[in-house]
Amino acid sequence: MRAVVKYKKTGLLRFLSAIETANAIERNLRRAEAPLEFSQGFHKKPKISFLDPTPTGVFNLALYVTVHLQGFDENLLSRLMRTAVEGLKPDRLWWTDVNVNRIVSGYLFRVLLLENCVDPSRFDPQRQIFIPEKNKSGKLEDFFKQVRFDKVGNLFVIVYYQNRDNLVKARHLYQTVLTKECPLVLVQRLEAMCGESRLSEVLGARSWAVEC
View (cartoon, rainbow, N blue to C red):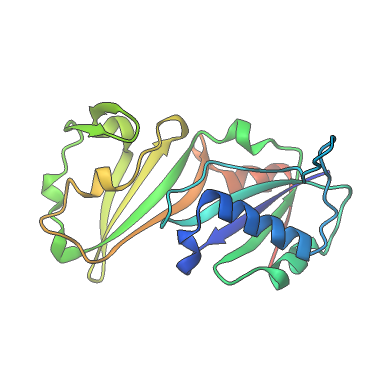
């Protein structure tokens, strides 16, 4: 049987690496006494898979984890909530056969900046940029799609979408609109997307969801 658990990685735990995050979630599953299914062979490992990791420091509000289990457990989510560490907690669980790694096409992100550090008129989707860590170059809109701006109090908000096969760090976008160094930059992954639909909506329509 397969369950998909949606975790939220926030606070100081957003600085955990992808490996450390995976280890912390596995410990949470073990502490909650989840009926894990294990791989075959000499070094047996629990069958757990993750969507693409976020860069260190990014708030991941859409950390979807697929867990293969030996059977249905109606109280699993509540036990996971009780045994999770602060900053890495599950809030929804779906019992499903949906393979999320096959249907997710990209992610929705949000960046929060101080308003007095930003000039949105500097945004040019046709601007050529170079991504050193990917050894890629292209237009800004090749990497950051559906970009929109908003203001909330003294914060400037940028929301954008990235294709899963073209993920790059948010700084390549927000640095193009900064007028000076910004002392506050918060990057959040809001949701995994399946075309025009949120993954949570797809799972909700095709699965049985449990919430806390």
